[in-house]
Length: 152
Image (tube, rainbow, N blue to C red; front, side):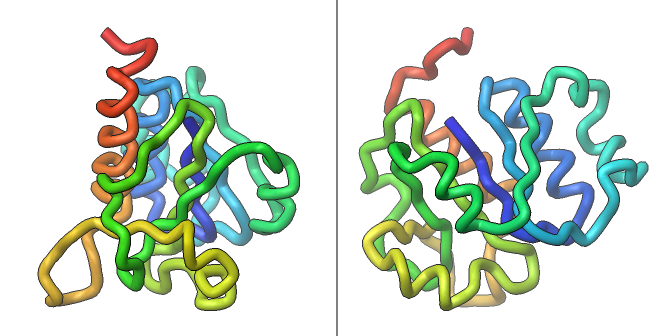
């Protein structure tokens, strides 16, 4: 599977997601401007000693990324979606796309793909769950549906 973070802002979240990606065999894609350096000590600390095992790719923008994976299905995580993340039947090559911590994914992106929006149910209070928690919740549901391929 693939996790895509579009303009992540908080290094600890990206580090936690990187660690999750390593332990699940998931590729991590970072898209656009990052709110931190890839050398950031908090990023490195959150990812512990997993960095050498991470399959990481960088992209200038989301259209560039999507053009590189034309045959893969993708899903956009958004609090504006009506489809719950567990109502999707995932497959091994699917892509899970998440926006930045403070802005999420832009309406320009969300409006282009209304049939690909998924959400985690939560109370209508505050903004949303933490980015690294959200990525883990959705990724592990996808893995559960596929009976955790390649995991022990």
